[in-house]
Length: 325
Image (cartoon, rainbow, N blue to C red; front, side, top):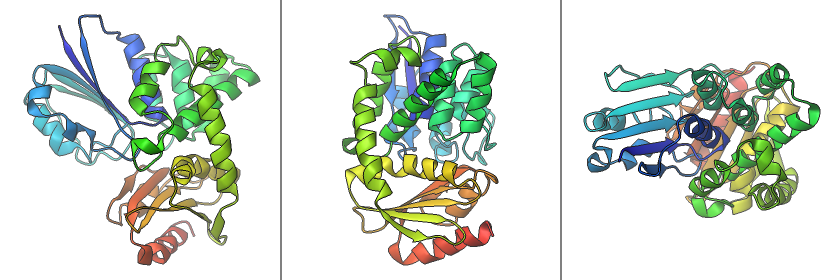
């Protein structure tokens, strides 16, 4: 019996990346699969592998920042058989190791699902397209849609599933979500294609769609903070707001491609949780800005801050406006 540890971000990109990977490299009934995931912002996942668990395991890490996990990656490499790491976030601390295979690309035009798709030579590309749509990379996803000759209805279905699965990943805890990312992965991986998920009335698609429509209606009625130099919206400290924050940010960014978009959500710690989307026309700098603040990070096109002190909000907004001026 072989032991496989699969770590993945709890959003659409992470889930659809692992679906592609395990469809290409299925496990047998004798193999042991250990899933490690969490809400979208729970990214220090390698720390959850202790030395005993890592012993003689084959580890796959998908869609979480190498920089946030570098020390633990270095540690588990002493115990595991191999470690495959695929991601599109900052990886300044990336190193080489005989047991480590890395596929990391931080360009704002890629997501982990597309990197996995490249690694698998397009073997399960429908899931990769859904990942790209879920990550807000509509124009990139459309290129793959055209390559496969998909029609307008199929494009809409892939986008809707990507957006809904991504929406489910946002929250301060798994309790905020409609499905735990682990459960959602297990249910979705049983389908041959994303289209099979959508036509099955008993799939998670229906519940996610109903929840999304309720939450997005509340988000659209929320207070707007700033119009000059960017769009900033403040959401309540409530499960619906935490669920919709990232997806609403992606939607506003698509509707306003020349402006940065900031979603500010009150949290239980008495601070703000920030989601920043760089302008679609200039998809750079989001991680640079957010990394200036404690608990901040991300990628070029989209980044965030887990806990921004309330008194620092004006400073953060000024940083955004100045950067994209």
